[in-house]
Length: 137
Length: 403
Image (cartoon, rainbow over all chains, first blue to last red; front, side, top):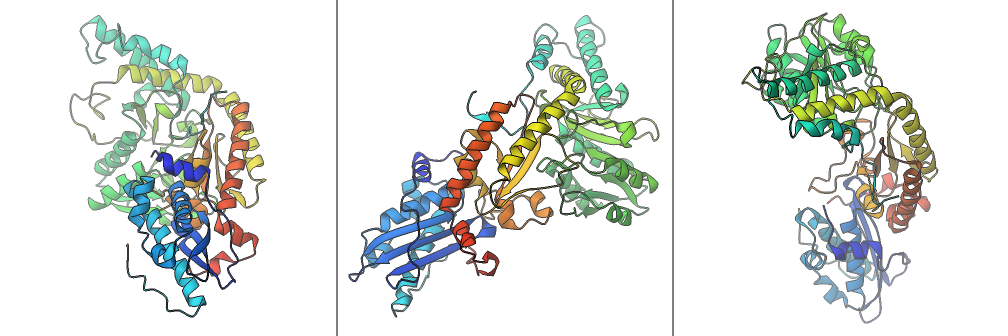
């Protein structure tokens, strides 16, 4: 299967690879997927007092599309408010990276990672987690 | 050195130029139908086929009359297993095979189960070999066929063929082997090995695609299979259909070259394979899959823990290899062969198969080593699992949100 140019670009030069201090109150961490499924994404956001995401980092175990999806997600998250970040839909990622149908689950995982990171941040700061209503499977 | 480098010789091999040369006249002026008995065009084609039959027979130690040409190993597997099941149904309906067989065997057995066959799928040990005691315990008076592959296509382990044949024969069953990966790579002799039926194909040994063989023993015992393709009664009535003369001529030549060059080639390839394996297992948390004593000379299957195979292959972009990870379906099922060895799913997802071949050079292997090391390190820098492992987190204790 041939990968799109954008997937290859993100895969070759992944943005925002790294680790934020998961114990910091201003950091939210989302760890989704499972090793047995062949994909694990860890996405982290750092949020300031105005609910703006000032930094985002990821590490991903998975195929090229999974790595590209999470790299793109971190790029999109930076500078967004939490509310804006919640509007990122997996289909936006599919479109941007031109993912084929068999790789759509990679984008779903990225969306799950974003929401999971946001909820981790909210819970740490005494807020109710958002309901992760959308079930993709 | 040209890029990309082909290291997937268990999937298929390039055609040897000497094979192509032998085939070419049979596409043009020697185009006759080998079954045309009444003119020179037919005779010339038939001569080509007869000669090829001798070349094939010589490689595996049988007689020419025991060679049935097919379209490939998949057809040969189908013909052998289905043909025996139909021919010997009065004797019994029990077939024994193993979980690590090729799909051409497994799916044929599944098909026969719907038609009343009782199939035992033997598990393999951690090293990929079957347990002979388990085989013996599975044998019954209804067992008509034991079919176990010679060398495995994913991990290269070579089964104890002689011992398996002896057990099958002790209980009056026939022994068949899918020897697609072994013939032409290591010495295979159907008499010494006690094989009654054997499937293999040309394109795994530097011959053309679209041609294969089912060996069917004619003496001690005389084995018969029911034809699965009806028509003009070619191949002693066991496989009708106009013979693929250029393909068969190419297969013959490929067999001859393997017979003459196999010993040296195997030595050269196992040295290169060892070099590759030794270099890559110097990487932390990398493991060779399958038995390292009883195996084919040209294949190495290595798991690089904490990186995913498909993502890794993308970083090894100048290397044509294959992965045990199949991140292409909703089920994300990794290799069933690796899972049969008891590998956990994550380790199976992390595996790469390197298949060396006749045209692989040492320079290419050196390049492959460097390229793979770089790719593994790059992917580990990106891997949250690697980071957690390095921090001493026990990954098996984490409750993963399965998706």
